[in-house]
Structure formats: structure tokens, C-alpha cells
Length: 462
Image (cartoon, rainbow, N blue to C red; front, side, top):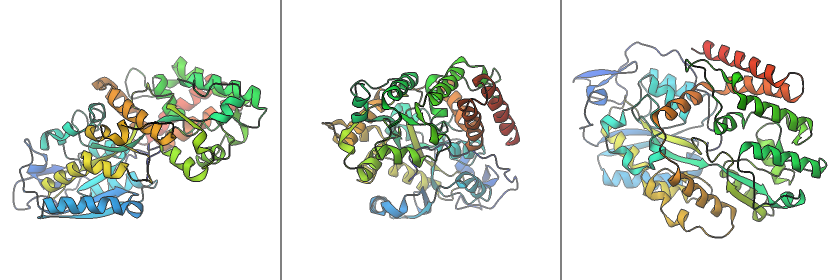
């Protein structure tokens, strides 16, 4: 289940422009139109709501869920089919590997995109831009009513129209080893509230610990984009297309502080190029003060370090003031669906409050729903005590319901940042930051070189 760092690369793929035959969609003998490179029923892309009957066979594709969560989704599918006896839902699962985005884009170009498909944000952006996702505002105009407004406002991946429904995700929280905080002379009840406070805390920890434990791992890859977005770093220049973060004083301050912390031993020096699992392993072993910021990390600690789990402190993440504290998965309806009315009905059903609660209450997950009524359930609102997962659920619900609806400008900016900041760009920028941390380049030069390489990658990808 992919609920951690969900920013898979938005791969620019050359899509065929040859019209394809209908892929599970529309009446081939009636009026047709184009969705991407596929000829589809005009009903799917023209003006006005869908009017077709809710019947026929549809394919529902999730991402890495079927092996562990059949007990959740089989009943949901069965209930939907009982309500709509003319519909058959075929459930398939994608592994969600590094080829996820190009695979889905290739399916779309071949007119074989699943009718109802679970997407991450970069893939949703790419498919919406190419015209393969149903315009929900036009075709299913009441779709957004069931979702938390701040989440619904952010799913305009194709421009101004909604082409995806927010589904489930992980709210960011700050997990703290309270014993280590106390050992460092710090108050676990007063954790850092922003990124630079976190850096200052790391410095204090290093001065006391003598290298026996650290604030966190040194590798900047996992935190770089999130920190910059939280701090309000401007990724783009005036044209809104060319990356120009090297000129931002906040970005420079961030790289400078990372380099200072690394030099001072405030970040574990042997983890500069560590895999993401190293943070989890070291935290579980009692070697790090701060854990991964996704709430699902708490489940990992509970399962793998049961004696540490009760000692965890949980607070709002340092990036809680960021534009988007919800890292989510989405549900979209293919514009090439032969049975678009059935697909839209099922997508709405699987994302409603009752269906989402079935999933989020499963003991193997620590995730949060997007349906407004689901977050009002006692499972979230009546959480009491200091159990870390209970605290995280309460904080997550509070964050979701208090988070303001983003402006169109903010949505457009964040969408552009996430679309361009794929794995290749992240790797290139992180590599330059690592050189600055090692003292092989000044922070200023590292940022300039990072910006240059990132723009080259963006240009090469189209």
C-alpha cells in the first residue's frame, strides 16, 4: 500500500495520436468524440451530466491493496452490485512500482485504461493533461459534496475541472522518542513547530548525545521537497515554468543549515546516502529522536518496536502550516469507459463515508479518509488518551477540518511544483545538497548547479 511518499515521477510519455477503438466505452454505432487519442461515446466528453444506465461490466484498479485488503473491498464491491444488479465489477491490482506512471499512460494511449482507477497525484496530472479522465464537474456535478472541501478543492489536476476524487491518505505528524528528548534536556511536550526549529533542536541534541543518538538521518532526499514547500520556497521564476529556486533566500538558508548540522554531527554522518528504510530501522532501535512524518510510521513502530511505541510523543508535524498536509491517493473515472455511468456510480460509492470507514478502521492501516462525514465518526473525534495512533487520528481529523480551502493560484502553483518535481529532479537536487553538506561545494554553488541540472531534466522530459 503506497501511503508514504507518494510523489512518483510524472513521466512525459509520447502518446499516440492515432484514434483507437472504444475501450469498454460507449456505443460504437452512435455519436463519438475523442478522449485523448481514443474515440469514445460523445456522452463521455460532451456537455451535460452522464445520462446512461448504471449497468455493464467495469474494471476497478487499485494500487497494492488486493493481497491484504480483500476482506475490506470484496464486501464493498458486493454491496454495490446488490444495489446495482446490472453492474459487474472486476477488481484488479497494480503493484505501484517505479513504472506505474508510464504503464498507466501507455494503457491510456492504447485505450485500455481501467474504468475506475486508483491514482497518485503525478499520474493523475499526466492523465488529466492528456484528456483521459472524466470531467467530474460536468459529468457528475454533485461529486464534490461528500468530500472535505479543502481536499476537493485540490483535485483540479487537469486545469479548472475536477478529474479525480480524493480517497485516502496519511496525514503528517511528528513522532518523537520522548526518552531521548528528555536525555537531551528537551521537553517532549514542546516539540519543534517548524523546519528551522527542528534544525535548532537537532543541534542541541548533538551537543548532548555525543554521537550516541541523533535527531534524524542525514539524507536530504525524503524531506527536501516537503520542507521547501512548507517554508514557502519559490520553485519557479516569473514565467512559472523555469525552476529558479537558487535565488530564494529560504532555500539557501535550508541548504546552509543542513550543511552546518552535518558538519557538527547533528545528523548521522553515515546516512548521507541512506535508503529510506534506514530512518525506520534506526528509530526503532532507539538511535533517532524524530521518526518519519507519515502517520503510518506509527504502525511500523508498534509492530516492530513494541516497547518503544508507548513512549512515543505525537504532535502536529512541523509542516502542518504547509499548503497540503495530506499525502493522498485518488480515484478517477476513465473518459474512455464503455460504461461511464456505472463507473462514475461505483467511484462515488467506493469513496463515500461508509466505504472509507470500512477501510480506515482496518487494524493494518493508519490512514485518513477524505469524506467529510467519515472524519466526523467517533473513530476520529472520540479518540482519547495518549496512545500514539489515537493521537494521530485526532490530530489528522483536526487538520483536515480546519485546513482552509486553497486559492486557485495556490492550487496551480502546488500542482506545477509536484508535476515537475519527479524522481529524476529530486535525485539531481539532493545530490547537489549532499555535496554542500560534505563541504565540497558552497551552498550557493550547490543550489545554482542543482537548478541548472533540474531545468535540463525538465527540458529533456518535454
